[in-house]
Length: 280
Image (cartoon, rainbow, N blue to C red; front, side, top):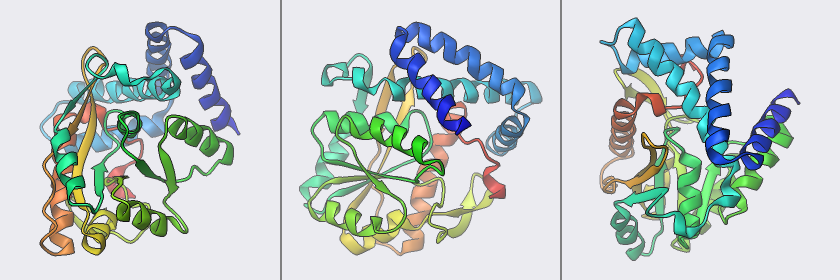
């Protein structure tokens, strides 16, 4: 229950304070957590040393602190989704590569948006829903029921349909793609425990098979998409060209692992991974 009340506190900060003030409090609390949470700090250090093998200790330390701060800002933005509106496009959010989504949907088989725990991935799906795209997001249920309900309420209040990554999720995903809708998945963690080991950022890691399996079975395109924070805390929702699904399942997985690898290398301080990624 402690986790729930901490998130609830963040929610109240987000909705009761002006955005700039909420950001300021988030930066302070995130910096405090950086120094007071050795387990999370060590995990982020370990991950960054893989991503930035040539970086010195000072650079890794600075980047790790930024990871914590970016997570605090992510929570503020996520809990303020009721403030978002379509008119925010162009100022708060810019879109690059939306033509890749349009081209995928013209095929009539839906599209799989492959994302990762980078930037503010939650806002990506919410803004696509605001633009009128039927949006399904596959999410791992939180182990605390009330936390799960709080997060899903935020996701669903602007039209995103949440599909739990357990149980009967597969049928709902197939149905959504059959109806030519969008399904968002994160590809940097294997929640289903059925992935395949391959090279990722220079070390071996289990990569989820889900996007490749869905693409092969349904004919849906896989379009990498990431919500990248900018220095002024606006965002770019960037879609990349579709991943080829003509090859084997393994070749598809290798291609989307490279897409995620590239974005993590570009924005290491925006990869919000608070566990020792290669030791899971």
